[in-house]
Image (cartoon, rainbow, N blue to C red; front, side):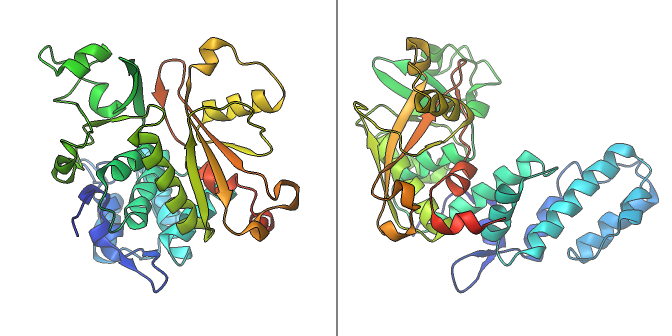
Length: 335
């Protein structure tokens, strides 16, 4: 079995009997190594002492008065957010349970970066043993924004962080075609180069073809089904839809903010203009294998999942919508 996504830190966690991830001291120390928490040379003695104490004992109780004694205001804020997040992780039996509590109860002041890192780690657990690079590349959409482009009839997703910052005049033809800055080579993932994904999985430098009827949407559908099964203990089937004629939105979930707006418009009977319609990246049909888990008012009906990009061609998934948006009976009892 080959490894991937070493950068998520999955080698630093344990698993419980049910396969959930357990926070370890080693994982907590990773947060202490973040530059926002590493005391600079001019840091006060309180901050330096606190950092050293937590490196020795990552679960050590930290009182509000201790943080309030830190001299630098920015450092105090960073420590408040970090300790609140650490305490949240430790209050829950698994990292998955901690994530569910965050998205169901509101993330509050939790930095989005922390939530994204949590999703990255959870998906690494969800996809343990996966041998399909297309599925793994599709899963990157859950935690890394993508820049979309249409080229020769293909709808391509490239990692926004990789292609969005630096310009290379000798970039690959794909990068030049996209007309955006680039960092290194960008290859479209195909059968001929898929084997190379394993050694490059932490570089996030493969583009994915999300055109209807091709490998990308089918791979993303598999990731969605696995994620729902792992997080909600509900078996679902997810299939991409190439033609969306006569779709009745009895229930829908937008997989990103723009898709939610599009779904709301369709729900209200509005006609989509051509520009808005062109921003729909993919449409999926989700069905439940056990109809008894579904709310009565939608029992027997499929749930449609909409994926869209912004007007400036950025795709940023919100996987929490799959957790809180499906019509599952037991979710109604969650406070």
